[in-house]
Length: 209
Image (cartoon, rainbow, N blue to C red; front, side, top):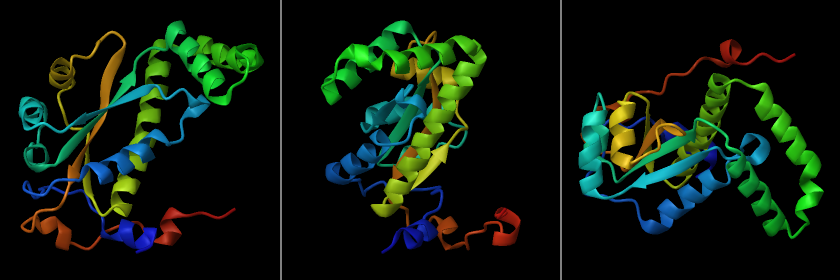
C-alpha cells in the first residue's frame, strides 16, 4: 500500500476496538517517526508522554469533553510543549549536538548566538505559541506514521489542561499539554469509517504561481 492509499483510509476514529492493542514494535516505529520530526532550530521544545496503562487512562477521562476515544484506545499520546526556553535547556541541546557529531562545543558558537538572538527577540506569549506550533508538526508526523503502520488515530484538542497537567505531574510554570493523539484500531461499529472523506477540490486548495 502506498502512502496516498494509507492516508485515504485514515480518519479521526471516534471509537476504537478496546480489545485490540498496538504492538510494542509498531508503537516504537510510530514514536521514532515523531522523534525524527522536523523541529525549528532543532530545539524540540516538547516532550511526548505515552499513556498505556488503563489506570492512567482512567484518571485522564474526566479531562476530555468527548471521552469515547480515551476509554477505548490502545495508547494515548500527550504532546507537552515548553512554555519557556531556559538557558539550561539550550546548553543541554548544544552539548548533545557536540557529543553526537563528535565536534568541539566551541564550533557551534555562531549557531548558539543565532538561537540566543531569536529567543531574546520574542515575548513569552510568542515563545509559547512558537513551541506549540512545533508540537503540531510532531502531531502530523505521528498521524502520518500511524497511517503507514495501519494504526488508527484521533487527534484531540478538546480537553481540560489543568486535569491533564495534574495527572501527568507537569511543571505548570514551564510546560503545558499542547495536543493529544489516541492510537488503536477502529471499532466495527464506528460508523464514521464508512463515510466518504471530504476535502477541498484541488482548484480551491492549491494555487500554482
